[in-house]
Length: 191
Image (cartoon, rainbow, N blue to C red; front, side, top):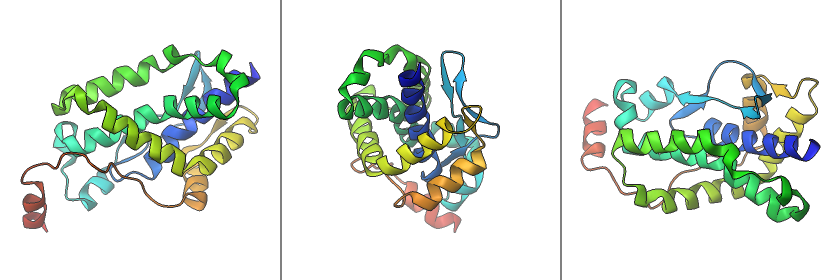
């Protein structure tokens, strides 16, 4: 059970860290829990203020390819963080269960479909998520420890954000994502 909780903690810490440091997303309200059902839960949502700061419309952001690509990378981060933990600690591999990420994988498929993104981009988005997890590994592990050492294996979003903002080394992005035609011109006209 301890290894499973550690895997869940690093998984949720990856979602949290990438959402907090993203250009378009933020943590949702409510406690972040490690033991909701079989796994944890760290819900994130599109951030109205972040979207507006980037010249995006929150009402149409579900169809925005750039916003959807970022959401897909955040969904992938949990699974990839668990894989990385197993690489670092091979004895954890026996407790690694990719099916526990079924909800994340279904959510990322929905993001791809809603924005009309070709599923062939998943490799590029996986690479971007892997780079982000690697770059912020120290923050992920610190956040995972904070959740594990709290009395109820949970953390409030504001506390999670505080840890990430204090210890992370900046934002992350998805290099190599196909550019959206005309988006720069539209953003320039709105400002």
